[in-house]
Amino acid sequence: MSQYALPDPPACTPYSSKIPNAYGYQPSLAPGIVFVVLFTTSAIAHAIQAWMHRRRSQTPWLWFFVIGAIYEDIGWCGRLASHWCAYGGTLFEMQISALIGGKLFRPTSSHLVLVSDDVTAPAFTQAGIYIITYSFIALLGRSTSPLPLPPKVYLWTFLAIDVTCLVLQAVGGGLASSAFGRDADPKVGTNIMVGGIIAQLVFTILFGFVLFIVLWRGRAQIKPSKPLTALSAATSTAVLCMIARGVYRAIELAQGWRGELITNEVYFCVLDGALMLIAVGIFNFWNPGTLLERERAARGEEQVPSPVADEEKTRPGDSSSSE
Image (tube, rainbow, N blue to C red):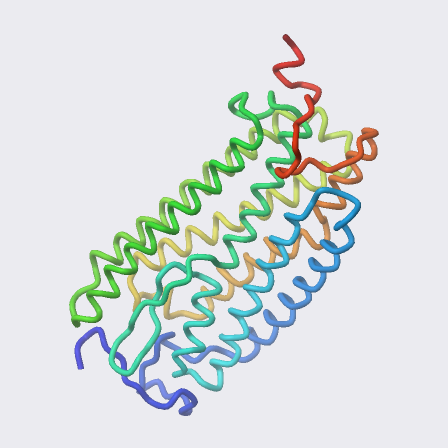
């Protein structure tokens, strides 16, 4: 057996620290139950909220949060089942594909191989947050953005960057997979994949700065508005959680597949599970569809800004309005 191989006991063999598995530990029962219950509750709540807004406003993008919560739930169901079947390759693939994605390891009869799943829970949640930022710029005016560009430019730019970073991770994963197939060192492919993850983290931080600038420049309109104040706080909290999770993920994978972070369940529960629960769940309490609808109603307008709108109206503070 090479240094990159794992033993292949039956999936539900009682866990033994003497028999290594893909996790590096036996997933605990309590965290699995807690996160499955909470993410299920969040997904149901998001679905109800999205359904309630299906006709009253142009907010079909609220379903991004529903899908993001469902993916988190699927991943944690895989981890929960892995408590009893810690050597199950399918369960490991299920949780790591849903929660992390890209091209990541799963055990087979002789190797740690890579699986392909470039769309994950954080990707859907982040897409929803991008659209909230789009809505802020469309509502508060282009002058609140760093550059006087149409809000759709920001939206599609960040979405395109996300896809590019995921493709980079996939390329690195493919190279690492090929190396594992030859019992070779997967370092080159792994480094490329980590580079894609770091690039994605950098652009998430950049997006955080864009959001901060928009909220700061629009503070005169946000401060007297309870809906916008609440949505600003919720969105900022979610972005900070996703940045913190991204830092953890980048360091974790940079350490390698048997590093301290990736083989320690506590880090995973706190720096991935808890942070994503906050990022997803906070919009259940401060739902963007409801808050944007209330703000537009207070302004005497009919619909919430949406990237699927046919035209953009000039907002107070637009550069075009001051010409």
